Image (cartoon, rainbow, N blue to C red; front, side, top):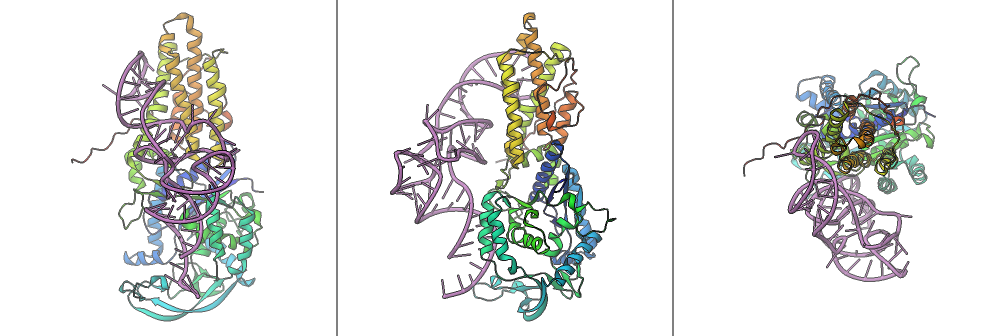
Length: 523
RNA sequence: GGGCCUGUAGCUCAAUGGUUAGAGCAGGGGACUCAUAAUCCCUUGGUUGGGGGUUCGAAUCCCUCCAGGCCUACCA
């Protein structure tokens, strides 16, 4: 059994700048990892970049760079974005790393020796310009290959194949008997049907004459391995699989199996739902060591797919610059149901930030602290209360918020979890209206009640900060700092009564300044 | 062609086959002054895409049609 919770993300291809979809997946996984830390469970968060392949090689040529130079230039953009967005990973999987190359070659060598790989010729139509074999899918209505493919020649080429179809029946049985293999459940259905149609083996190599930017096959120096046995292997190579004891990589048995591979719906079939489990199975991993696939949806732009060619790709770095990291992280986690698609809208980003963080949570913090300072010099009094509304808040709503939040987070439903946290703040705003501390302050006989109300507000805010901390680490620190609480957020501390009698609160400073809409274009 | 998903209030979304289909935002009305022109209360608003069927009971299950999205394949 692993002693650390291990999360991975898809590794991003270093051929273009990151867009909002890349940012979403990494923030989502960062939030899951931070929740584990909040629960004081050791966690290892691996993410990275896929740097090999034909597109990188071609793009590098166009810019007059070596493939490595080009890949590293692009990698730097991803790394900079993760730093900006507060994505704090433990391991960085860059596929040009020598230790990754070593693991890939050891794996290929083993499979080759075991007869899982074989060499075979393939005859087909080949586009010289695009450097790829064409299938009937590429034919136009007239049944011909259009001019976009340039010169098309009939060509025979030898390659290495992985015996994928030999494991088809195993995979079907595995999917049928492991209902949590794919989350959400409806994706498992989709996968099941796709596997049924599976036929043929998997081509895993390219001759160096066509593609040189890759990892050389250990048993045939004329070839490099093609994407699958390079990119997918990152999940185990960077976790220390088949590594030498002094490699500096993690101890593999302390991580494996990963709790979840976080991926987008576009790479479930066939890569992660078919190739990857079969690769692991062929390597001898038992069924209980095949990780869950957590499949997230996409951010669309006004209902349609985001793409560079449509010119509607959203730049996450620009958004973070314009609205702040907290606003962006909050929006990405709150406005999509994990596994589903959502529509990206800057207007909704502003609305949700203003309504839920600025007006609700931020203003609650500000008004609560102001009253505590105005009426009590910032000193809290903790005393037993018999007031029904306060008991309802402490034993009812606060308790329920923490429970609902925890359950939702355990099921990767970040949006539902945030609702619970914000709901507790809402209950506090209601309490302020119904108890009217400004009236209590004028009546000496209500001194005890006023103290109790102020204490309940501060204590609730402490809980809200703890619950928000995986999504909004900085802002949560900000709330706790204003409450004058220096403890590192822990879920075990999210129980009522943490603030001691006589606690001195900090100075209120508006935490979430409202976002203003950009000037609208003249009609 | 095959597969999967979605369709519920103006918008974004909830509702293990079980009260009168809910919440936030937006709209309308009111209250309050501690606070970031914030907050709180009340309120308008639905033929659950259409049509059949099963059931004591359907947004939910079955059939069918319509609309949108995604994956995948061109086999008879």
